[in-house]
Length: 103
Image (cartoon, rainbow, N blue to C red; front, side, top):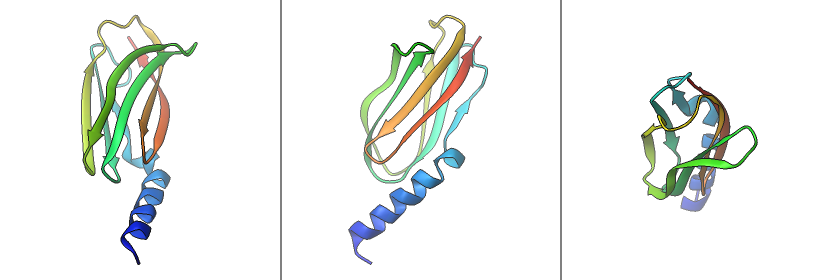
């Protein structure tokens, strides 16, 4: 199997398992919110959160080059008002959206 085919297979497997490999905690969150996930290949990645209406509230991780493997990012969200938010984890290899509650 060629190297490109192996990378494509690894990306497809990571996308399929993303729900199992992306962890966002604590929920509900008060001061800090942590994201831990598996980066299937070296990729440009970013994390943004928005309120329920959609405007971007915060770019937690602007475009950054992440190495393949386990990634953990912890962010200060103390400046956000209490409420429900949507997070989006984007990379050139995959994308995931979820919700969290800010106390």
